[in-house]
Amino acid sequence: MAQSSAVSLRAAKQPKAPSKASASASASKADLCSVYALSCTGSEAELRAKLDEAAGLSELFRVLADETRTRILYLLSERELCVCDLAHLLDMTAPAVSHHLRLLRVTRLVRSQREGKQVFYTLDDEHVLTLIRTAKEHYKDEHHKDEHPNEHTSTTSTTRRRATQHG
Image (spheres, one colour):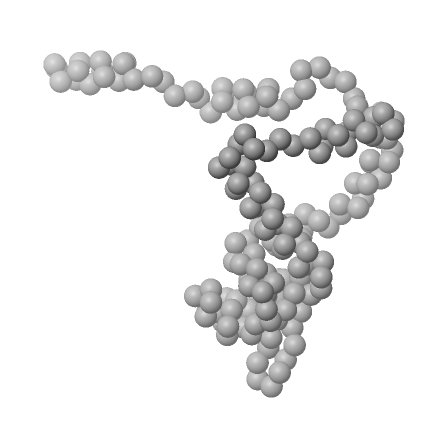
């Protein structure tokens, strides 16, 4: 009995971790405006029309969200490679790599060219290369910000938002 009371005393002394619900509620409050006031009233129709331009982008990002496919694209941003090269570099089987390449081909991120018994892959066009380079720069900048938080202050979105409100 003395042992169980010691355990309950230790449990009582330990601080309680915040529940997921309370952590979620405080995080969502931080993400919300404290006052509901629209800032897009002058450009609402234009912004709604822009939503049509986003059609299909989620499919592209879904394909890019897979780590293996991202690694394949990154390697292909360096040079043209055949399925065997990719399988070797990624420590995967050729059929597994081929499956990922098929999805990348369908979304027009890569293209293939057969040379004899080998199939070589490359990025489909400059847009894909730009996408990879931009993502790499973004990741590098974000990683640098995490290491040096006081060096970066972002005013781009604030400046853009204010310019559209007053312009």
